[in-house]
Structure formats: structure tokens, C-alpha cells
Length: 120
Image (cartoon, rainbow, N blue to C red; front, side, top):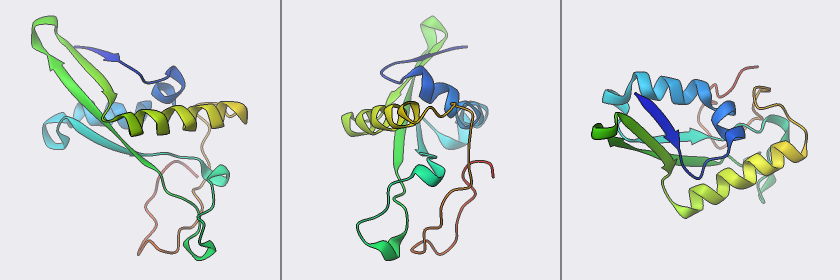
């Protein structure tokens, strides 16, 4: 099956390829909507409240099956998601960050636990 991306920059597709591949393998369990936490590591913006730590940004993607064309089209779930993805990619590219480069995510004290997002 072919996957086409609409309104999603190539940088984002390469950066989050592992997560999207896992989504495809588990599509029956996950369903057509996938949430992705943007991985900005030490470049994540700080929350207006310093006690909160770094901002945690989540975007949603939606997959639409086209059985007649044997294809899946993946796009941002909303205009807001599209804008967040665009801004994230622009920020990382402006900082000259390779799409496959990841850091340990900053602490976010407001989370009861810190999920492992990205590779340390």
C-alpha cells in the first residue's frame, strides 16, 4: 500500500518516520488518528510558568484509506496541527538540526512521569 502525505513537510516525515511506521504496523489498534509529540529536546520553548518546565506540543495526523487506489493519505487533522507542524519544522531547520537527530527531552515537572520521547 502506498502512503501519500498532504500538507506535511518532508522534514517532518523523515523526523517522525519511526512513529509513523509503527502507526502503520498497528493501524488496527491505533486507528486513523495518530498523536505525535514534537521532539525539540533542549530547543523546546519554556512554559510561561517556569515551574511547568518546557512546553509539550502534540499534533494529530489523520489517515484516509483509498481502497480503490490502494493508498493511504496522511494529513494534519486540523489547520492548527498543520501550523504547529510547519512552525516546528521551520524552527528545527533554522537551527540546522538534522531530521534524525534527537536529544533527551527536558523535564516537565507537571507530568506525573516523563515518557520516553525520542532517543537519548
